[in-house]
Length: 350
Image (tube, rainbow, N blue to C red; front, side, top):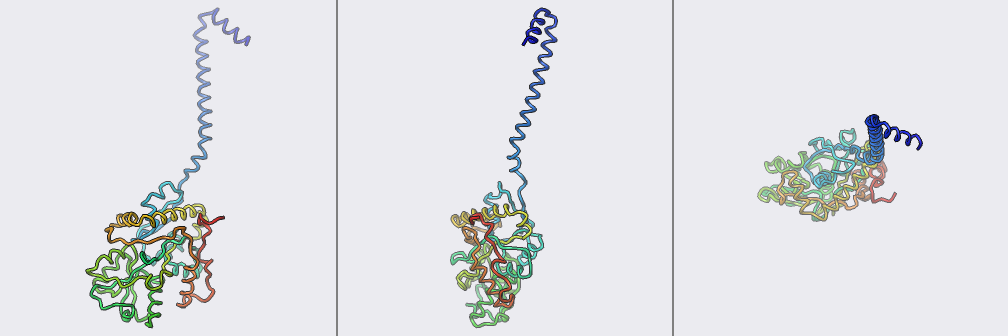
C-alpha cells in the first residue's frame, strides 16, 4: 500500500509522467484480460470435453439392400438412426443366398435371414449368432405366400408333383417348409423342381411359364396378390404350419459383436422401438416401405415383428429338428444356445 501511495503521489506531483503511467496501467490491464480469457478458454474446453467425447463417430454396420420388408429400412426411414451411436452402411444389392456367406466372412455385419440358414452355418463352425427375433408369421401377415398363374390347374399342394417352383434361395424356409408339406401330403419332394430368382423378380418367370409356382415374401407378395388378372394365391406358410417356421431373425458377425457390444445393444433397442411403431401403425408403415421401394401402397404387404425382439427358443429348436429330419444335421450336433443369444437385448435384466 505504501508503494502504491508513493506512485500515485509522484504522478500527481509530476504531471508530465501521467501518460507513461497510464500506458503501463493499460498494458497491465490488457495482459490481465488476455490471461483471464485464456484461462476461461481452458476451463470451457475442459468442461466441454465429456460432451465432445459423447459425439464420437457412430459405429457403422455393413448391411445389404434388398426388396424386403425389413425393420432396418423402416427404422432408417423413421429417423431412428439419426442420433444413434450405430448406423447402417449399405453395401448395395446382394442375392439372398449370398448374405449369410457374406456375414460369415465379414463383408456384412448384420443380416435378417431365416433360421435354418443360420443354424447350418453355425454347425459348420461359422462365427455368427442370432441376436434379435425379427419378424413373426401371423395369419394376417404370414411370412410367405405361394402363387400360381390365374389360369393354372394347380389347386393344392397335391398338384405340385412334376411342377417347377420359384424361390429366392435354397436352404431356408421356402425349400424346407415346402418339402415337409409335400411329405405330409404323401408326395416325394424330389418330384418338384426348384429354381431361384431374386425376391422381387419372381412374378416374371411365373407369368411367362418358366415356373408353375412362386413363393414370394413381403413386400413383393402384396404386388402379386393384387394382380388377380395374372396370379392366384394358393396358401401361406401360416396355412401350412400355423407360423411355427416363420420367424426371420437378425444375426450378427461374431467379431463385430465382440468389438461393439454396446452398439449392438443399442441397435436391438432401435429394433424394439421400430417393432412397436410398425405393429401399432400398420398403414403408415406400409406407406413408408412402399415409397422406399417404389411400390403402390395397396400392393405392399407387411410383417408384424416381435415386440420385445427376444429370440423365442422354440423357433430355433423347431428348425434344428427339421434339419436333423432332412439329414443336414446329426442329432445333438447343434444346440439352440449355439445359435442365438438374448444377452444383448436391453429388456433382459443383467
